[in-house]
Image 1 (cartoon, rainbow, N blue to C red):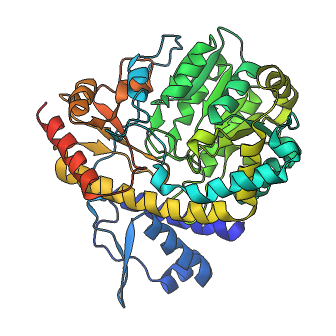
Image 2 (image 1 turned 180 degrees about the vertical axis):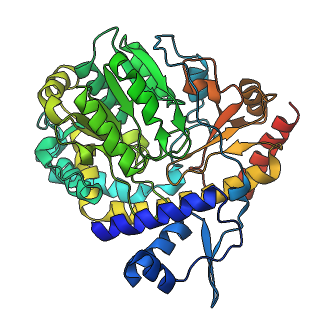
Length: 470
């Protein structure tokens, strides 16, 4: 763990220098041997530094010359500023725009830049069908019986084993299965909150979370969020006495794609624990990293059972299977009671099939290919945005996940752009969907989970031309 931490630390420092313009396109970086000497590390650690920077498209190797800062156009696109929502909790009803946009799910006549899931063509559909068949044969009574309240044992065991990769060290008894990620979040919010309580979240934030929080009679307090490093901890510290629950997506959240540094995660966990405020961690995008390793979770810094870690395969394997889970820490009994009342049991055959898919190693092989495809898609999208979108466009630089956040100049109205785009059979997610406040009118989210093609590039060109006319 020490070597992994060390190469990460060095790579992060160099990446910051590149993004801040201290190191510029075309600048030559120190050689592997020089890096070893400068940072007092071994050859393997130094090599992994460059692998990490290459994975982030920040540097490129030139044969017999060494490593140079990449001259890709992505690095010349400015980042959006840190968001500045009002730090006053509210319970405004979410915009009907979300319902309108998500009603496009399943429409084959549209290019769905608006729906944040990977395309079915990127998923191992044939293998999943076989797993369903095997699960039906393996389960008692063909899977028609209720399974244990905590959920499928194989699935829980495999999720626990995988947690070792991000420092979770979970046991199968720490986990409860759910009908997808939103169901896990719902159980957590119901267990922890009561009508009128305040939930702190990132801003902008996934619309489904906004709708869920409001539907339970809770208030939303939106936190300023950096497009690279996530929530501003100083802002959280200022309002910590005013909140009852914190709900965050620390790894590649949507729509920004930000990823909180480990030091920030640890600080947030300690801050909330010291104020007896539970943290619901939605880690649904954590497996979709573009670099060489999976980021840690807030749960890995939790020593008091105060973090409720939630995840699912909805964004990585099978959105329609509705397979999720939660490690609720000290709130386990509360969540079990809720599951007993609201669900009783999960879908036995589906959860057994996913558990076996994880056990056989097929999931990791699939993830390896999916991550590579998404990273390539990200580069294609950024190139198209740079070429076709209006002057002054800003964009995030996610290092994982499924989303890119686009910020136009103020004259571009995202809702009008959505309406114009729909006439061209293009569906986008306008910025106002991601807040309960009056903000992000000139922003959109694009999903990069579609297979890249000339047609997709043409659709982005059409979208850019529409924005230029506004």
